[in-house]
Image 1: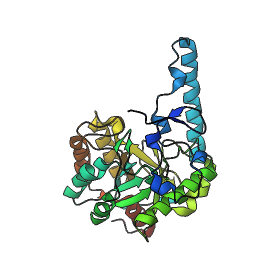
Image 2 (image 1 turned 120 degrees about the vertical axis):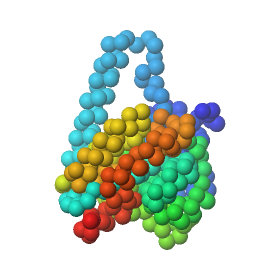
Image 3 (image 1 turned 180 degrees about the vertical axis):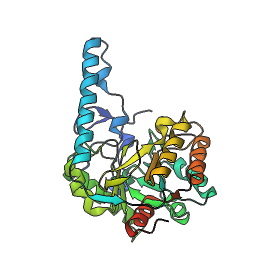
Image 4 (image 1 turned 180 degrees about the horizontal axis):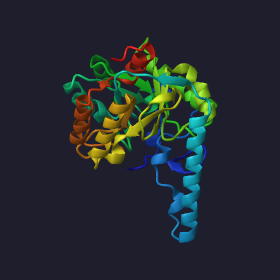
Length: 315
């Protein structure tokens, strides 16, 4: 991707393409300083830590293991603190299809596939990226919101600036959540985000605690389904692109969820014949949707699935 003119990210000093900055017409309305938030899609950029050819292999190996240990510790912290317990006692399995970043292809192609089965999904949007070209493809336009709501999909929050859920300070992260809601109100007055997806990483405990009051539930990753006593501030999801060449893995997870009567939240980004590394093809996606339907699961957007569980009306 070409760089219009680089700026430096607030926390790591790396060069960031300016075309990932929030749209000017929305930034003008914001009251929060963007520099306090991790820059959009910072994790998608190549790390300069591993590109210095003068470094030895031993240093690379040490850095690799340090990164893995750090990631493990972050995941343990995210799972263990600032929990909002919720018991899943479903009489029938539930499946939700979600799309992070809301690339246009997720609605125009992925949404069309869901509609062909009479289903709807959840689209997690960062309004600061609206209309931009991102690593996950062209991001949604303002006019796409009308189609999304007409088709019965849910619009969820992904922060205004696609803030890194771990690297961003909790207060700045909360400010970006509030700004995203303000941007939504500008375009669709009276509409409120009810569910949330953490961008890029697992969240800090302080972040979970701060944003809990805004949402019925918040989704992370984890590559598993939800069963038993879960955390509404940190629901698990399975990213489809990690197994897009092995659909049998996803199908087996759907079958496990059916037997356990759990709640499987499937996630991805773009849906395209030539997907980015964070997306999958229409054929693969349709195959997974069909298997979910044939499993006998209730396939619902995230908020509807949560409400079904909360009211005990799963049948």
